[in-house]
Image (cartoon, rainbow, N blue to C red):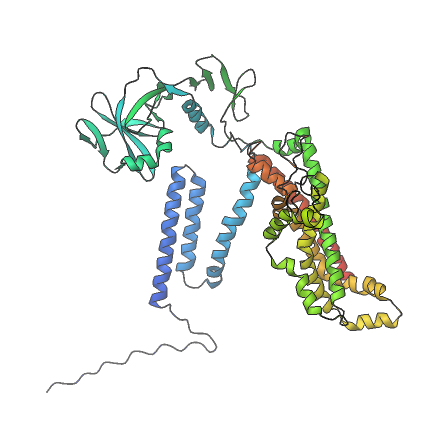
Length: 534
């Protein structure tokens, strides 16, 4: 007879201390989601670090790896619940806010812009490539175009039958694993040989490539017009590394590095492109000392203060007036009027600005053709009228916001204050000036400061209406009569006529920041005093 055996029941979990919550282990699905998410993040980080390392950005690559390691440590450990919630927001804050601000501040102290984008080695290579011209009677080399990791290369068959491979800026080197057909190299392990349709899609990039024959760039480079034959091109500019100079082999002119980020000849001629260098406070000094920059800059600063100050004052006055009128319980259809008043606030500002731009058109606009009976009033092309038009449009766009805030603030004022003032014999104007307005300012003063800062950088209304114009012909700078600081920064940074100067634009941005910060600090101090007074 077989004895029956029974398994001992599992030992019960020890009771938790009284009042202490029992820790719950994560489920298998939650653990898998966490591991998969971290795996995707780590893969992206490793790829980014690899790309940064190829570009020799060692500091940033190291920072990315350390940040990824810290994130893994936070999410793989038990506990640290607050950190798990704070890490995503902190990462986005650092990447999209802090890094952008710090980098923009750094650019203000450089000459970064058109002609000064890369480093000195890049500039030397580009100058030599720009001076390349085809060598007469150059042999034609059979070749094919290869691609690996998105980078194009030339696979060239030498006259002795050997294969060489090189890419744009990377000299030719032996291709030992090349595949031949009919004595011509047609492929290489690890590379994809482009067919005719693929080469046609990248024709401009292939035609712009220059593959050096050796480490010595003066020996020339291979270029191809069709992707099937390569020819030798030699440079008319020679770089002497010993003296750090460029020599024009055709004219004999010598260009030296004077520390300005470019090679310069004795007559002041610069070879472009140059390279990015640190210039200290030169951009700030130029902004306030060079007459060609200082004059337009001061005019723009004055107009920016007028534009922002008048807009805030006018929108506040109109908004408070309408809020006071429509807050009177004796007024009929108050709700209907309130809906009509806030309509400008319901439409996107840039769309409203475009509509006003069409209405103010001097030839076909509704205002000239319908309201003024076909008059030709240059609302947006005359310097004075353009400023007036912008101010009126901006008041139209902003008063509804002030109306909404003022309405809420008026309705929060205790009625006892108003009744007490009436019993003391105060009239409507005295009640508003002595009772309602001080209480309104407690609520609205911070919003007025914020509105001033917003209008100080109100890019949309200026650019949609006039693009900063009409153009100021008295200066060489690309600046117009209605430009404010932010539109001037845009034109300096991305201007099509005067070129891009990111360094000077960043210096202007820092000036804007300092001005707005100073005004905000003073304004908030006054607001605090107003709150204490009330």
